[in-house]
Length: 207
Image (cartoon, rainbow, N blue to C red):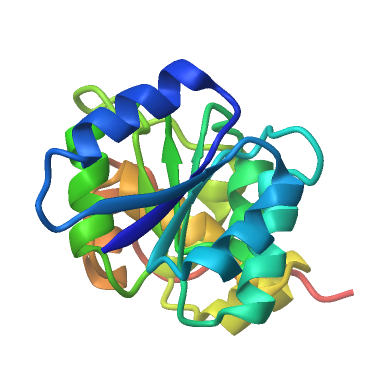
């Protein structure tokens, strides 16, 4: 796999380059220090994947991902960033990125993600919940309850006045926090940890 690195931090790039170059199946073919350099460099070198920092000079990583996806639909785009807030993650997915990796992620794990990842949006580098103390936002609890009640993404979106894309975003966080791989497993774990109630779905009063 041919890779372009886009990051203005020399130490980070040096560490990435050192680890990635040790693998026979990964090759670094270029590096951009500003967002405006990314698209021309990618078009010139033709990589299979791009590692994008969000906070670069010039165009930021989100805008770079948007430009790359518009021109190169098959390119693998991974955001590598210190910004772990929900807004950045959601913006990255909307821009067409394939994954969102915090810079705290083990570099070896990063190499594995590049070499083996395919399919669903990848989120890595976030701390795992400790013990049974799963911390959920108020909106995540509402979405989780709706999943337990058997609602579809469309139904959840209608009830909460949010888009299906936003529902999927919350579900991805819930899958990660509860270490679940399906809606059924998510609901089961939520009930086991008493994060949602069981029984019939409450009805709303009319009028």
